[in-house]
Image 1 (cartoon, one colour):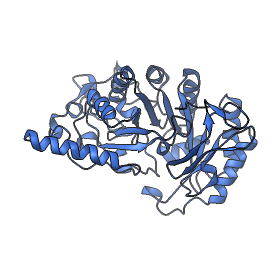
Image 2 (cartoon, rainbow, N blue to C red):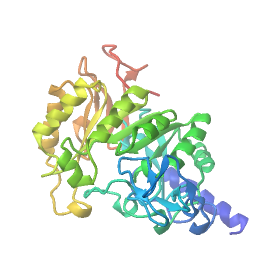
Image 3 (cartoon, rainbow, N blue to C red):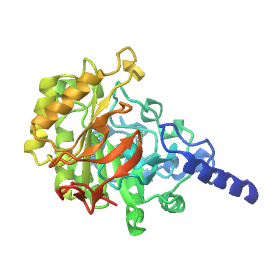
Image 4 (tube, rainbow, N blue to C red):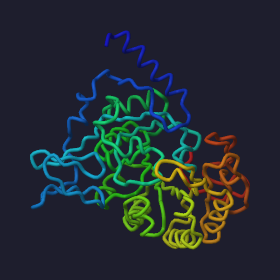
Length: 378
């Protein structure tokens, strides 16, 4: 591509980034460096972290799936393969989705509210959720998607150029592109940029503890509080996610939790009560919980949307169990999208969709009663 044409393309990329504030779709389809997908480092292969050779093949130690692969086989997350008895990641420097989002979209309501976050994803996921909203990229491989050439240093560059204080590893499952996320996070941290993981929490303890040394915040999707439902809905297990929440709690990473309420699957009041009791007694009372409305999609497109009344019931259950910051999501105009002081009941942050209308938190405290409001405030 000629230099002038490249510069015009780059300016157009930045212009469209600035215009984006929501939506899950990927950016317009042109590679930043005009490099064909085959030349992108990730698709060519990068040595994976957390692997071990066994008599049956190379075992990936990254997540609880514990894939054991022989030469040429591909992991369940669609991102790892073995060549000459070594495990390689296919997802490095080759994101298929790039957006500039509001922080509230992640959703993170208590972490630098109202700021912009540079968001990236590669193809692949280590779960197979029936209700995945991004299935077109999560349930495929990096060599099957149209990708950008965006190595870690370029991600940091673009975040700085576009006035983004943070980078989000999101949309698909960042655990599946762990090496790319980790190396980008190291560079971002040096540049004073915050790192955010939007994840299913399905990761082994050792990789997660290493990642937490460079992460600043995370939103973890707690998909159910029933192990059988977890397996049938996602292909994974509940306990590893609970273990991950405890590691986040102990690591100093700011944490928020999302619970998607799927009709006939996770709309069980007793299970929600058990979940909130576990969170409350486990040191998560100050952790924001987002009960999110399901809309028909992917393999559950025959189901109805979640009744708003049940979302409100779930929020009431969480409140009874002692949770302090409770939100309902995907409900336009909901009062439960606002941040309320758990002490005096003052409405401190007023939101309309992903937009902050007003913010009356002062130095991390309620402007009326002075009570501490837990979070990371700008």
